[in-house]
Image (cartoon, rainbow, N blue to C red; front, side):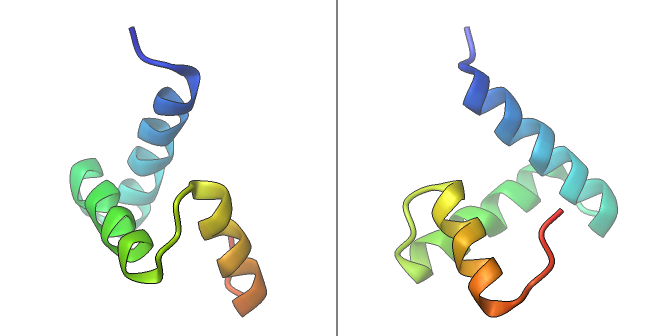
Length: 58
């Protein structure tokens, strides 16, 4: 059974993918690669990083 965080992760990837016109798997993979390159370990760290840069979230 999926954990609540995993379900949220899949839903967010699906929403982002729909907005960008790409598959949810592609959206998730792009986020994973970005987090790896920035040495971030959680979605919360990624969101904090985006806020510090002044990027829109959501």
